[in-house]
Image (cartoon, rainbow, N blue to C red):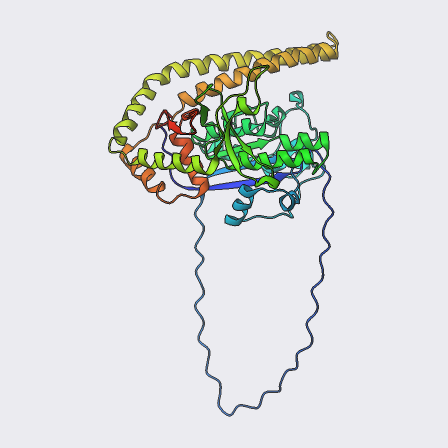
Length: 445
């Protein structure tokens, strides 16, 4: 189990109106009325000199503590004005507890790849040189220094979990310790991100793609896009997203939000009840209110952290991890060798096309095939890398004491982070009677 240092975490949530989504009309600022002239009285001459004023003490400025982690979540295609028209309680709560702006503007053109390249590097298009918006590995990658460059060079763990594979081009090769492309819904991206958070990180980018895709298909602020915007908000804020499993059929548990007209309540539900597979019957697992289950699981976590034998459990996990590490290191080396072979094959295909030996269609077909194999290899290597690089806890007793201190009065964000540290994916099992159990009290990582 990895017990992270309890430093501050910095969350940057960006409403990314990517792919040149149409913007709402700008509000016209009403000028403030000018103040009326104020008459000043002529002072009478003083007969005694005024006392010499003593200098007032200047307040000392205390620098804010540095953040131990940076988490960037981008909701692709979400306009800022949607927050006024759609129920988004999670985002609204984050804005109330932190600093926010609804008037910040991205670069032009505001396409997904170009805008994200600017976000991760704090630079304009002329500096990062990402001028395309597709997956074009032959064009290279960003020219700018990115956040991942700095964190990776300092020894921090960097993670990207994205819904569009082309985003790998916004960072330099090797600076993303984990790159996970998740082809699916925002909840699938959130579930994968949750599992990565449990491993610990210093910089993470999470990209939610569905709002953008639905906006292009049905129109911005259409009823279809409003529905997925609400689900994106749920994906950002649910405590057990990606950690719960159905006790009836074994499928993943998703979150489901009612329409605002029906109250906007949120529930945990079996994915095979929400979306049956093929002609199979819907799962019978009942819906469970998010607030009720989150509270019950949190009480279980508090009890688990308070147990007397926790220090011994930590020691057992450390010993088990040390035994398995050589095996994972060998798997990682094998995956790296295969990655080099795939890169050489891509270079050879591009060279054959440049010399006119194959057609453009043949080149695209070969590159797509290599790309699919590379994506599979990336997932395998990522899993091996996580297991091989799991850091040992230098002082288990201090780590347990710090964990117990953190669990006493955490913020909602801290609760989610602790849940992902202490619960393995699928470790919360929902039963047919609506109850839940923690099948594994503490994640192996």
